[in-house]
Length: 204
Image (cartoon, rainbow, N blue to C red; front, side, top):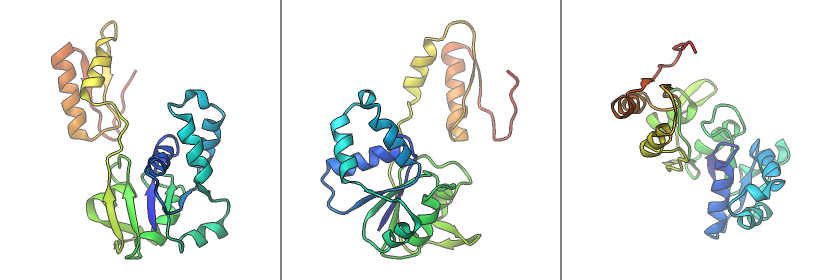
């Protein structure tokens, strides 16, 4: 069994569609808030790039509806896609313990992992918290870069279109990259740019 912790909006659907597009033969299971996202997207198909692929994927997904089914799925070879992407709450935090402590199973991280989250601890230390204790994982572990964020070039291009003399605040990134990005902004445009640390307060 493979667990893929993924963000409920966008990433869960992207992973499911990717597997379906490659004719993945094993059952693909989806659970949690991602199912609510599926309903919203199904009602707004005009907003999707490839609605046919999305609908085909939904038709072939195994949808989890209750706890009895969840426990049964852990004993069934499959791919389980469940939020949260960093395993902070959500049903991925339930599945992780049943999956990663079995050497036949695996977890694939496909999202950015913030410092201090269970996903980041797994990424850095190959350990997972079970009953408030960190334990070395028995299953396999992989990290795939599915980032949908813009890179430096795209962000700098976007900033070039801002009028006036703005102050740019770089958040939601590693400290080293955020600081480097603010330096690039100051050098290229002369704007005030800040990379706050966790807990810093900024007056607007």
